Length: 395
Image (cartoon, rainbow, N blue to C red; front, side, top):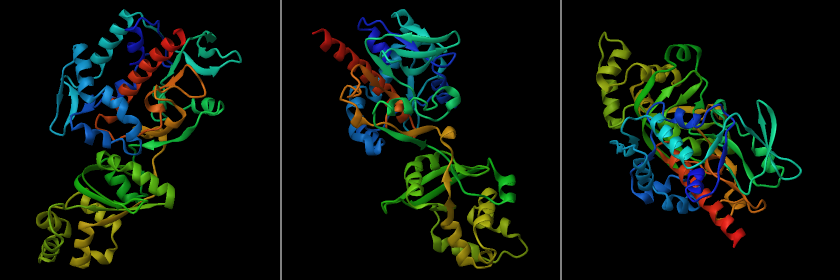
């Protein structure tokens, strides 16, 4: 996005990428359907950026979700909003958008340099790149760093840039997993039998480190080590922060949403005759399969002979999340270059001519199109920032 803004305004742009091809994480983001942005009202959209709403708002007001869709239309890519409000290309794929975009960038004179890993600066302030042919030095009038966070390092964003900026006095918050799964520590039987099974239509409730109660409904997935999936990702930031502040986080799952506790007690207490407990719970409460197994994993054996305690477990099953999964497994990362280290143009205050954009900035957002929207908007802002800085120098 920065390259596009600059090249369209007559600036010669050289784009360097450590990977053999451009946009690998972008393509991975589109693997299950390219969720590019969200169609909800802008105020609610901005709220998704949490503690960094104030810093992200001016970027996203200039390049809003509607502006992003219009930009895609200019590349020949139509979009639609699904029933959830999430916005997708009509063909659901990332590759056609990337191809059309790269074609336009090349036509505008942008030169792409692959397998060039940025290694910081030399003593003369020149950029250093490691290439298959050896180290290369590059002099630039201005630099935009868009080096990603620390998730999915195999796609290029490994966070190796952070120490290089810290050494130069730039404030960088430690990179942490965002939109991530959590470890629970299942028993061997449950782990081997139910890893990979979806938990459909459950309600997650927990209290965060500030004492605020969160309640969300949706789906998640049992993994070999714990839980992940949309419902968990949507709550991962406060859960991660609570674990960091106070150790394992207690959550509760309602396995039968829509049914009052009193009704569940009645249904569980109903005589089951010769039927197994599993068959009884399935027919009376709609709890079956992995949900039944989860009850057996988390409740004491004595609870199954007490309808009140069993019903309470169905409506509010306690699980202890021990730790977030590693950063390399997360969908995205929190932490990065602090906005306080940047001016309004996204230029590092102590390093004139060096700008930062994308996931390497210290912001986070849930899945749902907010991550890509934030990256697009910050890249565009950095490009405009470079234009302004270059103009000021010349003027």
